[in-house]
Length: 375
Image 1 (spheres, rainbow, N blue to C red):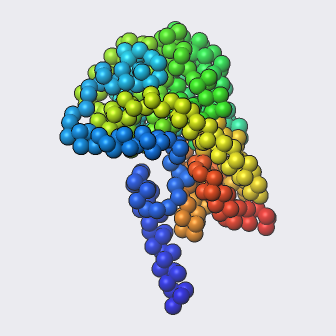
Image 2 (cartoon, rainbow, N blue to C red):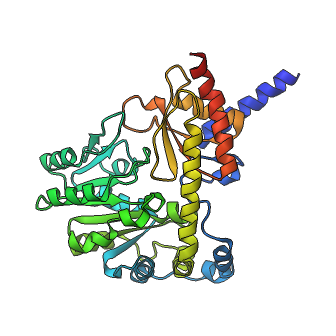
C-alpha cells in the first residue's frame, strides 16, 4: 500500500513537471523552489511594494500614460534623454519588433537567449557558434561573419544567457568600430549587467551618443525583480531606428503598475545597489559550493545564474532537471533548447537565497555526484 501510494505521488509529480514545460511562468502558484527563472530576489523592497499597493484602485481604474511620458520616466532613472529611449511591455516586445519586423538579416552568437532568433522569420537569422568549452565571443571573427553575411543587426547578450559570461566592454567597443560603415546595428543586451562585479562600469549605455550603430537593450525584470510588471527598454542615438521602433509600439503598451514603479524607483537607488551586491555575494557562494560536486564543471559566473557541464556517466540535463523536481521540489533549466555542442550535458541554475542554494547543491551532489564518484 505504501509503495503504491509513493508511485502515485511520483506519477503526479512527473505529470506536474511535464505540464510546467509549456506554462512559461506563474511558477509561484506551484510551491516549488524556482532555480530556473533569473531575477533579483532582494528587490523591490517591501516599502516600494507598499507604495504600489496603496495606489491599486487608481492604477486599476485609470489609463496609463503614453510612450513619450514612460520614456521620460525611464530616462530619469538611467540618466538619458527620453528621445533615445523606447519602452516595451518587457524587452520581449522590443525584440519582437526588431527581429520580427525590422531586421532583414540578424546575426547572434549561440548559445544565447533564444528569443532573438525565435522572433525572426525563417531564414533571417545567422547563428554564430561560440567555441566550446570556453564559450567566449571572438569579436573579430563575429564581426567578419556579420559583414560577410551582410547582417543589418548583430546581437550580443552580456553577460550571456545561459553561459553567464561577460563580454568585456573594450571588446564591444572594438566590435562597434569594425561594424561602423557596414550598415549593421549592434544590439547589446545588458539585462544582467547589474550583477557583474563591475556592474554599471561595464555598461555601454554611456557610449550611445558616440556610436550611432549602437543600441542597448535591457529587461528590467531581471535586475529589479519585477517580472510581472513587464518593463524593458532600448536605448539608442540612432533617430531613424528609434522612430521605426516607436511606430510599431501601441499607445498604451506599458501598464499603470509599471508606470507607477518607474515613478517610484528613483527613490530607491541605494536599496537597488545593495540588492545587487547581495545577489553577487550569494551567487559567489553558490559557485564555490557547486565546485565541490564531484565531476561537475562550473563556469565562473558574471550574472545571477551559473552554467554547468555535467560529468560523463551522470544523468543527462533533462534527467537531472526532472529528478530534482520530482524528488527535491527544485526546478532548474536544462540546456537542450540551446544551439550548442552536447546541449544535454549542460544545465543552468539561478542563484537564490543562501539556504535555497545550499539545498540545491546538496541535491545536485546526490543526483550528479554519486554517478561521478562511482565512476
